[in-house]
Amino acid sequence: MSTEYHIIREIELNPGHTQRSLAQVLEISLGKANYLIAGLIEKGIIKTRKLRTEPGKIRWRYILTPKGMREKVRITREYLQKRVDEYNHLQEEIEQLQEEAGSQ
Figure 1: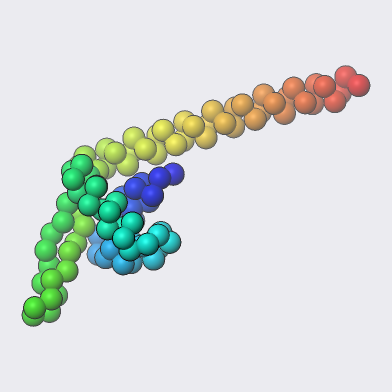
Figure 2: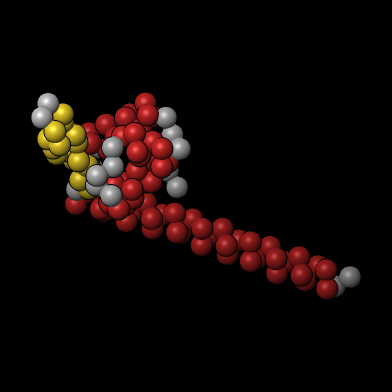
């Protein structure tokens, strides 16, 4: 699955993630996390809300949009279909090999 999908999933599970915590959880660089989050914001998949946690300190909260939820479902379905296709292909190969091995 793509790193973008994992970001979407992590934000859904914990909107309080920071870019730094997302980078750590996903084992990517902070720069890559920043780049991918910016792209997801640009696409309308996530949005941000400014939070003031302490005087003079601003923190961002990431929110999955309805479009983001649809995108997550779409990516999940595509991934699942790909895995099912791979499974079916392997199943066919196994049956062929069993037939070949049994006929000798």
